Image 1: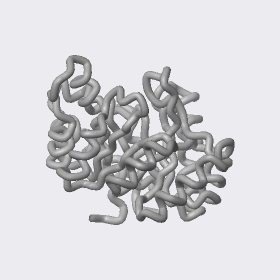
Image 2 (image 1 turned 180 degrees about the vertical axis):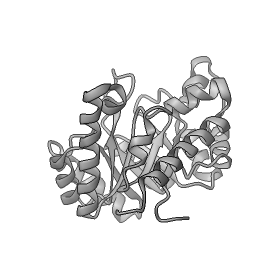
Image 3 (image 1 turned 120 degrees about the horizontal axis):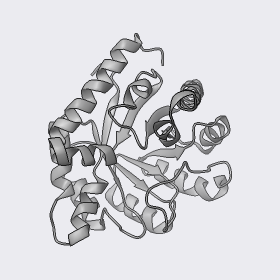
Image 4 (image 1 turned 90 degrees about the vertical axis):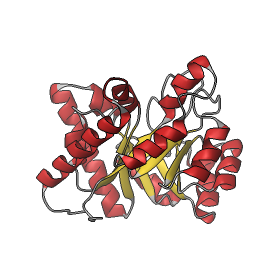
Length: 251
């Protein structure tokens, strides 16, 4: 794999959302993970929420046992979630903010405000050989604290960019570029995610310091109309085209 190749992590949470709307076993998120692997995904992301609104404990067990791609477990920094992570030993754990009343993750984790709480979780995951990622806003302060906490990876929350238009969107994109550049200078691997679509992925994929995109809700929604395999293949193509057009890797 080229060092310049941008990885695609497919989040299969909302396959489980559809399953849970009716109950039973179908559609199966593990089947979606396997199809994602066949269609060009480089990893699988799943968020085990405290209220278990979509992904279940058994889904995490099966994903850990049955898929060949690296598993990225998104989780809140709680003792319950830490115990689950240490039991299953996913490739990576992305620590995210979580509120019971939110429909989806509404923003980045404020690591500057909660560094004392986060520090022991990051240390224990690192000690277990699980790669820790922090889901943060594209902010210099958040990046500097992430570095001080010893997190090897950050994932930039790009939702504000995806939802904006015109000059406002350009401003958000500039923040993402600057944050990705700073992450590289600090020796932190930089990922990005939340809200990316076929229309918004290109400019983010073109940022050379970003090594991975995690995309879920849009792909699962698009799969209703075109199939999951075709949705992933198109996203993969758009990412590769944007990366190639950006020129040589400077990360």
